[in-house]
Amino acid sequence: MTERPIVYHIPVCPFSQRLEILLALRGTPDAVEFRVVDITKPRDPELLRKTRGTTALPVLETAEGRILKESLVILRYLDEVLPGGPLRRANPFDHAVESMLIAREGPFTTAGYLFVLNQDRDQREAHRDKLLGLYRDIDGFLSEHSPEGPFLFGEFGLAEAVFTPMFKRFWFLDYYEDFSLPEGPEYDRVRRWRTACMAHPGTDQVCEEEIVKLYYDYAVGAGNGALVDGRSVSSFAFEPHWRDRPMPPRDKYAGSASDADLGLV
Image (cartoon, rainbow, N blue to C red; front, top):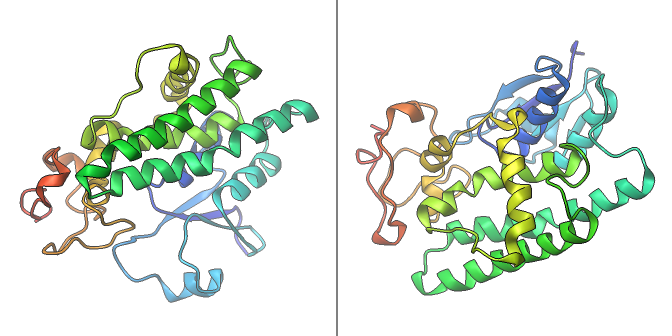
């Protein structure tokens, strides 16, 4: 048994950042013990035993030694058991509305990650169109349920904690795909929401430079710590620290930079 819950995580992982945002909003950053997992190395057999062989992170171990998986499950659990006002809406209808918005996060996240992983220059517009369609859908939802905003309800809540880490990870699309939301009424409401989410002081666990550097391997087609052909070090490696590395090349379609070019050796 442990005195407090343990979260096994990747520091830059968006799904883990959801939990960090919750703790920041509660003002209790030490309510959970975070234990870092290096995804560039084989998993610790003891951790695999706890998770019954699965490798997806984050994973929460309760004080009683019980295991919870899936970031949304963990987020909702911590929201209920930790001291402080809940992120989720107390009113049943309001909670249903925020849950409908949260249900849009999976396709949104998938579209963004498939976009950055894409290696076919001719497919760029198709990926862009897919993501923009999802932004328009979210814009319509927010315009219906919260036209003034900027948040879904009066303050930063559960839906914002779910989406904000994705908005920040999509800095890799701004950098590697020159992506931006078009001007116009179809995107105005979601733009206000995204801007307010990313500016909230409880969400500053990561910065754009960090995301762009660490996610370089995603931009050249290798995710989750996998090695790019011809490279010996993952861009997710802990050392050298990302602050000590140069900015990666923006043209992901020109081929992978070397370990030396990326400041990894």
